[in-house]
Image 1 (cartoon, rainbow, N blue to C red):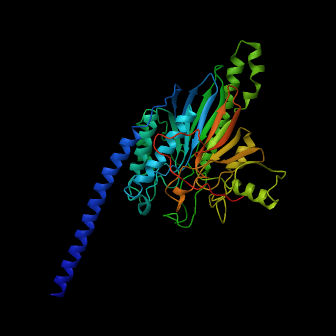
Image 2: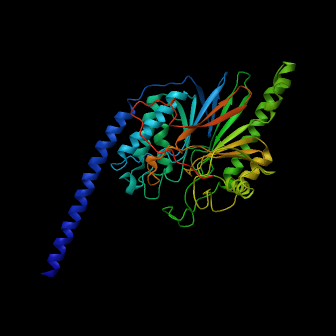
Image 3: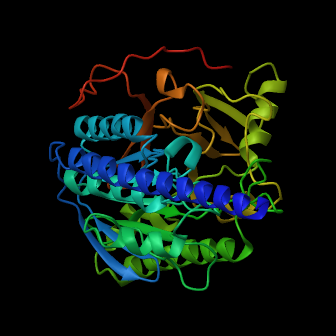
Length: 415
């Protein structure tokens, strides 16, 4: 009798679980469809950018004028019933900044989706990815992205390969698998080709991976590093670009052509990744230990460090990516996300190490009500590859939103 009673109780519990799961799935579907509808209602911005897929992770961007690039990071679209309201806030912020800046190209440096069920209400990382892709297609702006640690969690429904293929179906999205034989997805190079047919600057995106050492759920903040074959791929990109420009100059019949373009014999480049390299911390610690004053190696540019404890949450191992950048002398700037409350820029040994403001309304407790950390980075690149950039806070008047912009506290962020 007791066994039968226990069986009945277990059956009831299982029935309740199934019913709750079914109701949750139905609610998720209804709210996701509603938010997709909202994403499709934002005003069209558009871009006339000419792009060409050269294969194996290489794109050409043809431009005979100043090019404007926007970095967004950590959009953190949950795609579930818990995050539905905050997802709309994030969509609204992205649309407002793109509408005002009218960038030619957008790079999103990771954590585009955030399928953490206790905050999103779903394990389905395709839902957040779909919200973003539908918004960007509605805005009509070309974009790419690097993957972050949250885009494809261990418990998510879909892996990086699937999500890459999903994104690639959208005409304005340039995310692809990337270079063959290289670890990760989205290891790509976007070569800006000027009116002289030379590469004026390369935008390089690198997959900084996710968690390591058994930290499956990221609870111990054990993050991965850039892998050796990615570094070798990066080296080949720089060397091939330099050879391309050199060949173009030697092949020209105009005697002044090479002389006028000598600065492009070494093609300048910018790297985007999600998790910062260790040198972000090395540079910040040296700057802080010197009383927040410049040192021989470190020059302060702007911004503050709002994260606590370690300040910079980089990979747990050492790699030689930064040393390789120094050796090759091409990359003058690196942009990352990941640490949402950091918004600083330091030049370390001649390379600018930059955090972008994040978009996140979801991941950090109470962050939807705070505003000092939310925004984007805007870059302008001229025909000679010279680049200038600024960090822009979302709550400026110039970012007029289609939907009502939320009230936030503009908090003080660290040093």
